[in-house]
Length: 409
Image (cartoon, rainbow, N blue to C red; front, side, top):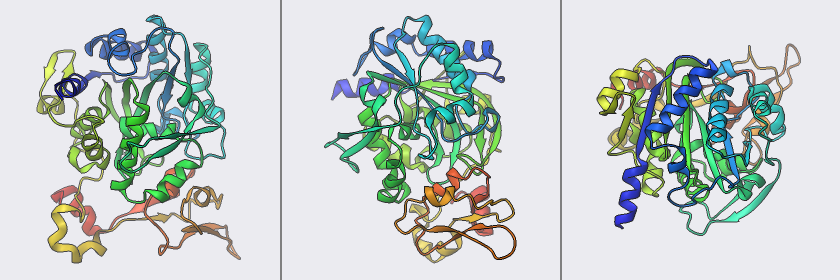
């Protein structure tokens, strides 16, 4: 037990370095400095469980949710990816590949990487794309929610993973950062099936915690130079946060993200399940900056932004139990902006519900548009997540918006 406590104490360090541009030399300097503040790359990769040598097969795992340009702040910026690759190479780690499982399994990983600028960055460093187009079942009897996963072929074969995540909002889990980014290790259509099987935010988070305990990335590097707020994880608004953050503890890293945007870490299901299931801790954070150790309050003052648009209310969980009659007035649901919808059907493909909760209605006059069957909708927001036209948003009532921003109840 003493060893476990010491491991948590060490891994709960979070390094925060300011970086207000994607100019390559500046990003590289910020990434190098952040990792140095944690003790240096070799010390991190060669220690603990799944220790890595310079011959180890390492996967660089960015966020490649969808085919979007880097300026949309939806995916890991290629400058950050390139900086991590440069750090690995300069430290003698050359057995590298990269990849992710995008949200739309019908699109090849290489096409998504090309549109996001990651392929060009990888090609410049001669880092090949790994096999993320096929999957292997891996049993996980220790799982709290999931006892098996279909993982991408390359993930199973890898000795270690470097998680290069993006700072973004998420309609189901409030935020997506280090913990949630591991979901891209799950192969193809099995991601949609997971949303159907683990339909609530809390149960889904338990599954994500199981996944983290299975794949155990060695290091988590968060691209927070330009984050995404609002209708994330694909259709939100870019928001400058001007930070690179690094940790061995994904829960701690996401918790610092939460504090910087005035969101209580305990309201994020992936933080709660991550801590309960031993992935990491959002308590007793050890924040390190270029000016030394910082308290949470000091970090928020230096790097935070309370105007960041994220869901802060507790809704009807916990505190709202005595007033459950308000629940219908506080629920949120996905809605289609018909003026933007082109009737492409990607939302229908993304819906994990048997029989589908959304369909494309072909109008006799005008253009086709997506329509919901809310009786079937499980509020997983896969449709919103994958819409390429930003035509789906999550609607909240006026009461819910007031409570979210002003009362946080």
